[in-house]
Length: 328
Image: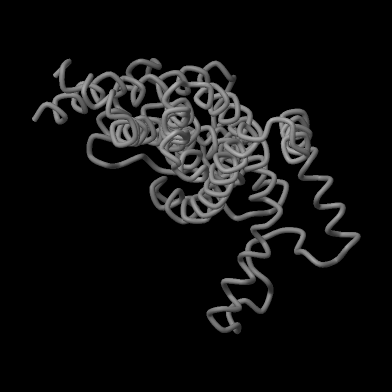
């Protein structure tokens, strides 16, 4: 019951984000002159009466606050609105592309975190090694090179080499391939976008993990564990890792929505059929409800990410478990 109370309070503190992010987006979109229906007025095949009917139907002539309240009433019924550009419900548009974006971000997130933790621990354990110096250079490059520039470099290199696909998610003959060849084909198409998306994350997390692990290695309890002749690998990958990983887990809540947002540019450059191209078109055409639907998704990811971070911190660190029970 105490843990339930702790998580309930944490949920209540993050819940306002679900409303504030769409509200800010709603207000910013209304600062831009015009709306989607202004483009329809230029079409001689669409009557002004039809345009006015749609504006009345979606309350677009009401004040911004009233429009937002109507939209909140709409999402309370699990209805994110109607996409004017795609001529279908926003939920259907997002669902049709969400799986592809989740695949790309999930693969990028997994390899970046896994390698950052492993190499961060090794670099902290062997600070004067060639491995540490090489990883420092890689991390510096990852923090310095913008994603779009790295993406263009890799696409150019792939075009010269000819061994990797330059865009998309599938080959032309994808449907005719066996199951294992389909998986291999998707993996080949994933290599460039997942590397671009995860490279900067790896660089940042590696530096953070290395500094935290180096600090833990100087603690007295590490010397105590060594006096008991515990294997160095066990000390490093269990005891040091569990004490050094807390800051990385805390960042998890912020990185999930940032990763999805950052994937948009990579998807556009590589032609990956995810939410990036959908959101670009939504902003360009001022497709109000589709942009708001994306912000709802980002808000949910922020809440879920913080919830997962709390769960992982409670599992990894017994001191936080004890503190949460005391506060509860």
